[in-house]
Image 1 (tube, rainbow, N blue to C red):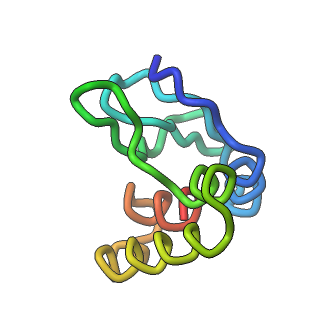
Image 2 (image 1 turned 90 degrees about the vertical axis):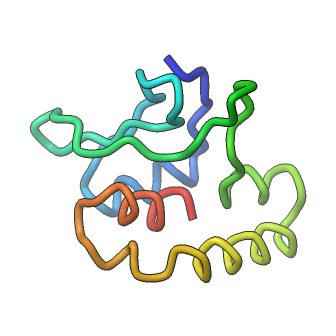
Amino acid sequence: MSGYKIKPLQEQKAKKLLVTIKPSTRKNKKIDVFNKKGEKVASIGGVYPDGRFYGDYATYLKNDGYEVAKKKKNAYQARHSGEQKKIGSNGFYAWYILW
């Protein structure tokens, strides 16, 4: 288990996508994404080698406020633009659940 605590905002976003999320069973990912049948369809969110989690919108929003979170979101979306277009991919779920 990754030990990542899923934020309520992430739960809300997952619900809109008709998926459920749980802390990942993979040590290098934060969240596992499951379809309606309970099948794992993606693992999203990175973990540094020392065990710290990569940031995400909900975490920045909670810890640093809206302005920082928005800047981080814009930077992420600029770096990963296009990944959200492949529906069902890890990039799709990261874009719409984490950011």
